[in-house]
Image 1: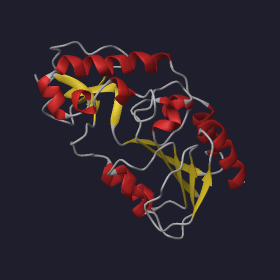
Image 2: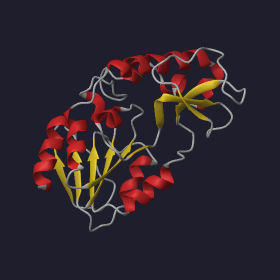
Image 3: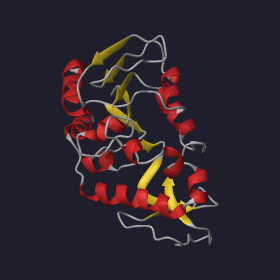
Image 4: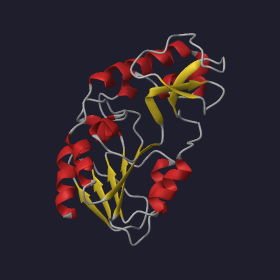
Length: 226
């Protein structure tokens, strides 16, 4: 089976009611990134950071995968589908996708403040202020914040380099290093972009654009791929 690699961003989950960050009415209009998504924010005001992610986790518990998520699952019947997601929700997994790599961590996980590898599953419960990890450090969300290294990037680059079809869904490709994954994709590999908004591909690939949201866009993609 041909290997499809799909890079997904916030627009993938927007139809599930998960707020995006940069669009009008998005999370960055409610919170400053410097206050909730940086190591400095954690050191200054861990209670605010915990409150922000606890809210996101509670919302995720009631959210459901949309037609875009389930459409990617259906592609697994005919293709070897690998998903690389910038999203911290678990909607790809809940829809049934079997090969999902999270670049920026997961809301349903937490880790110690000292050891990034000390990850535990917490599901949808709140992290309490002052709660400790097994190593004795403060328990924090297992989220890769701005200014932190992306541990899964090397694996993601390798997956992208073997893509026979590369698909970008719901991401502006403005956030690095994730946006740089396109540079690991062979110039001979067909590239599809599913997004209702214009997306500039930072490469010389020939790109086919599907100017729709995730649900309708993935259905059109499936038709094009036969």
